[in-house]
Length: 456
Ligand SMILES: C[S@@+](CC[C@H](N)C(=O)[O-])C[C@H]1O[C@@H](n2cnc3c(N)ncnc32)[C@H](O)[C@@H]1O
Image (cartoon, rainbow, N blue to C red):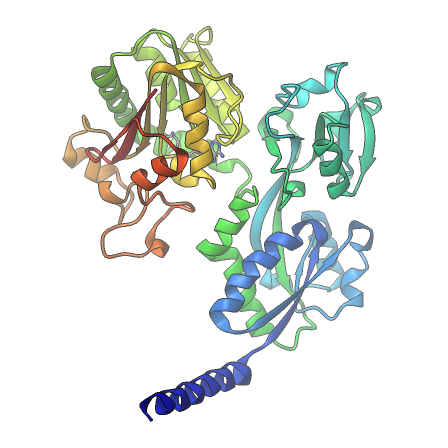
């Protein structure tokens, strides 16, 4: 009897929920350039789960870029780049005021994991032993990079999937194209981003989304656009797919603001590492070095041969400048690469440090496995976030951004939820991370932030 009552109640509740959902549920049609369709679909699925609304994603190919919106009856449009966004705005396809940034894509060199021929960047276009593919990209971007290089490409196409396929089969060694081309590709290619500052060319495009004037549910469509633009969960999806959220301007800003404020912290962390591990000779690596301030401190305070590595080419450029200014370029180097695929042989480094970078990495198990691989037997890695043991507590307190404490240097605070974390991929438990990576020789350090020491 009781069970029947519960069933009836449950059914009534369920019916109520469904009724409530269907009474207010709205279907949003999203027209999106095909290369971005997977990421927009994934991010919109989170909004659908939260709101009960429906989203239909209509991918359109490059060839239809200019006509597509006129054909479809879309509520939201995501163009391929700023240029098509501007043209659509002029044609009245999109409501200009509704424009919101979604993510940034950039022209990059894309290589297979493991990078068999050690392609390091665009400079390798001059090598005679390589076969290149080129994803035809908007003619107004990056063409000056290619002057005199046209003959180098054995295949050129707008079909990004075809290019990734050729890369997987080893028929091309590298592909030049938008970094967004790799989205969702099972090969999980490595993206070597090109520094806009070095090439003086607009290699990066901020991809916006718009509500259309023809939408009959503009308010809900606007909520979807806002969600895609702001939500942490949507941003996670962009980052997971390898998309950037900014165009490198952050690195320049970081160098003159945060990194300046942290100068004493960098020295303190380096001092702690020297005191604790006594490694002052041999080779060191700083992963996610940003504009290289801590990397510089490490080189200044030891005799180590130091490499700073960061995915952001602009940051690496600034690091190189610091090395030159300090006259340390003979043993302070910088490389733009992905922490998930370190361009070094195994057993290379005596010391590896990384501050504030782990919670920006989409696959931390892979990243720490890479750390372990390139660490020399007898070497130490010191990874984490915070101000270090030697920074006086009252100093450290002033330096944490508002609301951040040493306990939430990598994740979120006690009594809070994941949404309270400022990081896209917060590190909740070093124990879980190390277990999953199969590393047993580690120690968690909870002083001066949250750190893990790995020995090999
Ligand atoms: C908060 S900053 C920390 C910079 C510096 N270590 C410091 O302590 O000031 C995080 C850095 O990680 C870099 N980063 C993010 N994802 C990365 C990846 N997949 N591979 C290498 N670096 C990455 C970012 O570009 C950024 O410079």
